[in-house]
Length: 222
Image 1 (cartoon, one colour):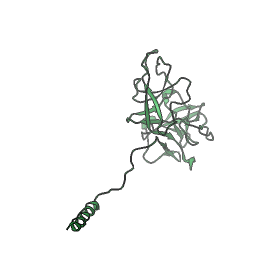
Image 2: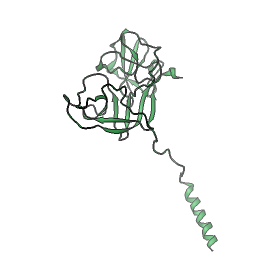
Image 3: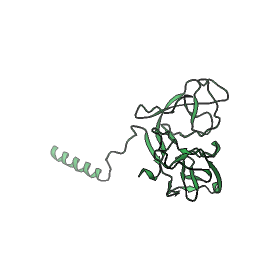
């Protein structure tokens, strides 16, 4: 009788598992995920990307163009125009155009006409590029700073990435630091705090893990 119960129980268990996917899922991330964005292919927006109609026919000066600090390959440029132009992650378009990304999680590209200067098409990327933007462990998205005055702090740290568009939510780094990221562990970390007018004392910044780091690349990567 006991043998019969075991057999029946096993059969019912097998029947129940037929419609149930018991394979393990992807699971949580065990380290910072690194993604490289290729937003332009053959001089045109890649699939899923589009040009901002309001940005057409604008002229930009690329006399000081350089490889983008977020580039993982050749063919991604920065240094054109003024800080307000936000042309720090750009690709070469057709007909003397420059196509610049707004943020790594956005599918919009700003189009410029290169009025002066040349793009350094043979420039190699930095040995350790800085992310174009990051997603923190708590879901906040932070985009790299492009010049401008961002305020100060009593501890002398400066703003490197903006997470909300104001001075209350900023990734900080030391004034002489080469990077805002501690990459010594599988999950990179950053210091997040506030900036203000003058040198206010906000106390020590909070260390936060980086879930995703976004870089930029081009077709030359292969």
